[in-house]
Length: 213
Image (cartoon, rainbow, N blue to C red; front, side, top):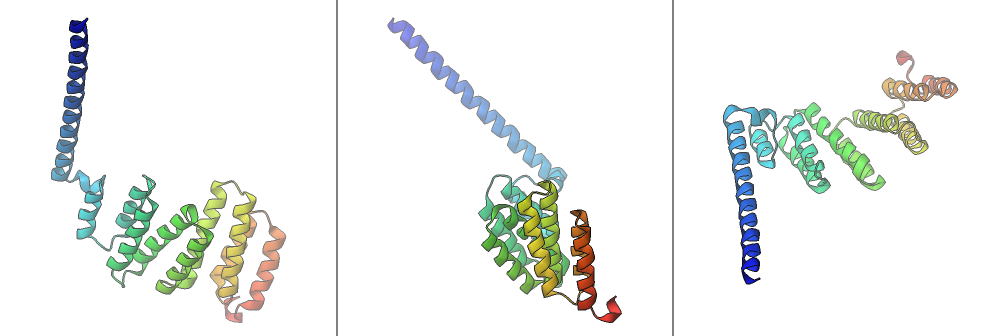
């Protein structure tokens, strides 16, 4: 019996050893693959680690696409705080002349707050975005995000109401801007509220300067 016990213990030890060796080989293969990717440049096309993104951003800090992909990398593992942190770094690193690139990252942050944040964190992000960008463009982007959310959720009551409130707020803030009224009217038409769109256009004509009619 003692011999049997010894044999069992030996088998278990041997199994553990084989498992460790297999794991080590797997890690070695992964390291080799990463080294090859760095050598042939494919790591630049398909960054897979935080280090990949850091290296790429060091050489191209104004690329909003890279910052947004880095945010998505963190969100893929449910690390919302790190994704927010990447956005904040982007605002610091992207040159102030690159307005479109900055607005793209702000849009990504607003999307994050819409999906993972609270009504309060979204409102704060909108306020900050307006301070750093063209406010009208920020509100148009937020409204686009809310329309997309509504489409994704197949026009649920909550998402339509949330979009309605944001469009109304935008038109009140920028009532002399034709693009905001058109965007709101298109939203009403998309949600089959033709009478509402007609009434809105009447209001727009009263608010807009004559030369914009």
